[in-house]
Length: 345
Image (cartoon, rainbow, N blue to C red; front, side, top):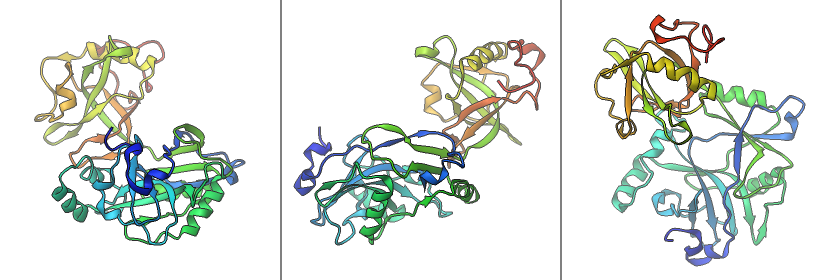
């Protein structure tokens, strides 16, 4: 297949193909375990493995082995003096406030025309944040402990425009997490200092610790579910109150337990209406490509989310529960199962 690692020409083809190791979602390690972890910033970007054969060329492969080198011309050439190596990192675009912005990065994704790529590379430059060394000067480093691989990375002294090796912290996870909260960053990755690198595997040696933002939203509709969700909703359509009425804020399709599905569906059925309760068009292809059911917007819910998009949508919203402590269920909405009234579902 074109763009796959096996067909990359030149000396980069001599470097071993290594698919990235993945983290699992988790909580901050306990104080007793804290000293055994290194903490890195969680970058809100695109994972990429860099193949640097030492001849001044560069190949960037995505998590799925797609060659994305041409999409990010500002990263070439790689830092001068690098020996042949394979590096792991994240492609990151910074927003106007100087923080990583996935919305900004999306402008650089899936481009094919050279003139457009060149123009946006100047308008929305991308940085490659390197956090691991997987192969160095003819030797695999996968079995080396994380701490040693970070030492090797520091020795490389990356020095080129748009390349960086951000620091990590050994221990002090609580302080590091608080720092990300103060600066409104996505969170941390906690990595066991003694852990090896496991390509193409999701391992609890790496933990994603995200700062969850929450928002209270009104449910205004739902889309028909499929697969194991057939017979109930696939996603809830939610909005925020405004002087203009209920403004659409996105769809929430994850985070529901079976109990929550069973609780919510009869409530939604009892609130059916024929027209959208939202002000103006939804302008959401994911909504209009599915079977949509509108409801009276009387159910208040809380969702977690990553950030607001420029279009005013919740990014990566996750269900947290009904806020029946702030808004009682309407009397005509039907009764939830025992024990559900008066608290989050």
